[in-house]
Amino acid sequence: MILALTSAEKYVGAAYGVLFVAVLVYVLIIALKLVRLERELGELTERLRAQPAQAEPRREVPVG
Image (cartoon, rainbow, N blue to C red; front, side, top):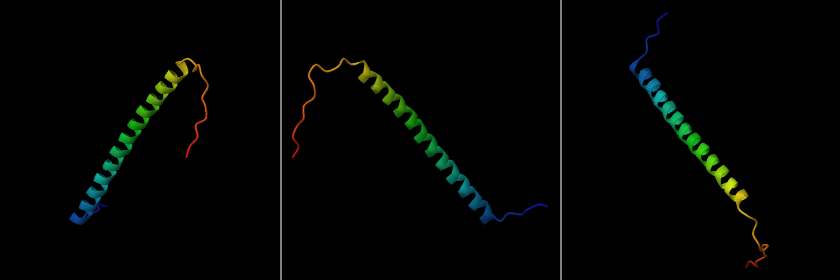
């Protein structure tokens, strides 16, 4: 059985395809940024752990 598509149905299918590709690209960009941020956070954590302990303890500062 062969389905005959009207031109309107072709345009709707194309619109959904473009929207799907746009959302896919957006998700990939966000995923790449998340990987980069996790790597930077790991580097900062390692830097912080590698620093020597502060000589003087922290003191409370009044706020307000």
